[in-house]
Image (tube, rainbow, N blue to C red):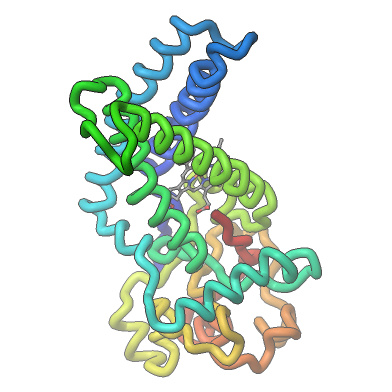
Length: 288
Ligand code: HEM
């Protein structure tokens, strides 16, 4: 077993810097948006300075984020596997809309090299790799209007850029509200809000080839490749919680603690246990 952080230090530093800059952009952006309408939260001049400074810093931190995702190969975590993705997405959405309120078990348990459920993957992919660059590009055109295309969608000047920038900013606001709400409802110690602060250390198998030799039938699940579960959307949990303060596995193992899951084909922790991985931690509430 090796101990790994769910969220490496570089990611945590980037994340909280990004969150702080985002809040500064939102406050100053609102002030600029409402500048003509009475009492904005910030006066116009300080709002312009804060917005431009925070925008420059968030662009630099975004470049760092992209570079680190490329260097560590973590970018792969954001790309959903297309096979069966609709079923898994539907199951995840149903869980958030219905299951979570009925006390149902989480469908997904995170591991350091598999942090996101399919809904997270698609949301982060869209926001971080499509919306974010668009928000930044439209912002740059607002800062340097001379560089903006002369006409877009039959509108001239920077007007289309301003409309797109505002719509994207509101889309990020919606993201932030849902993201924070789900972060606060997370129940796991190794992948929730606390883990984004302290890293959320977990034990993982030291050598995957050895695992494959021990348990060929379940290796696909340990790798996160087998999601053709009997229960659509159920993604197994190949992680062992490092903390020994958590409740030990009850007699009878995984199925005994989660009767609803016993006998379900592809129960990751049962298979992971057979593969030599012991899951001791509570489940993760996966979220956006
Ligand atoms: C104060 C506000 C915020 C809080 C409390 C918060 C909380 C969290 C938490 C707990 C996680 C880890 C669990 C998960 O994967 O969902 C996370 C991940 C993430 N957050 Fe936030 N967040 C905030 C703001 C933001 C903002 C403004 C953005 C981007 C615009 C953002 C982008 C992300 C991304 C991309 C991840 C995944 C990182 C990775 O594991 O690779 N967050 N956030």
